[in-house]
Image (cartoon, rainbow, N blue to C red; front, side, top):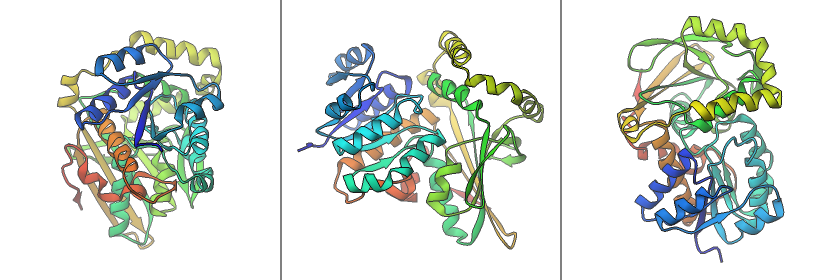
Length: 352
């Protein structure tokens, strides 16, 4: 019997700690796990159980996950943790969720969907700001324009900045350029491949395409074959990014990447609770059909990290409960597009 136990792996990270606090706010008592001693310190502080282990041995991870209904992986970069954790979950029959925005993680999770079904588990990466808000908006837009063939999504932040883990992941990903979806297929493109003006609700701003997770997941959520995701960047900044493209390949070299990530460790300062309270996230989407008709939708919600904490616990709580689902899911496929309405600070979708 799994007895509805669940685990937060990487609980000692910036976002992991927010997930722990959200779980406690709901009266839940997850087991905190990770590889650092600070996990034990955090568990002692919060009055929770802890388990310290690395992901080096799949057999050991399987043993650690036995008896757990759900594991929420908050330990990035997920390119280094998700594959091992998901493979372990297949053996321990533990539902898997994480907070990644990394396309290769979604691709791997989808590739083992039949194995997940056979194991009777749900594999649902991206249950935080990556990608709940955009994923659910895409599903809402698809419902309103069933014949849509093109989907553009975008988001902007005010008053917040990336966590250390997100910054490291972004550095790692820049070496591989951009991604869009064309004709149902993933396509590698240069950084800042396209630009367009978007009004998120605070005036029109210039944006560029980025390799956000929805390029992969929104196709499975909506079936729309052409997908792009945009993020604010000035025309000058976009030009600089394209100019530096040829140097980005050097980020694939291990020692250079470690050097850059070490600098992030030394200079990064976390968002304070006060900053997160004042922060706001803006989400926008647009669908177009073959006739050239378009429909846009936009909304606002809270700071991305607070939303990630809420989303992680919301999905974990759902999976702990009674359901008969198994296989690969996006958030909107798992819990429905109206999951959006449960998100803190959700303003409602404004269409035009």
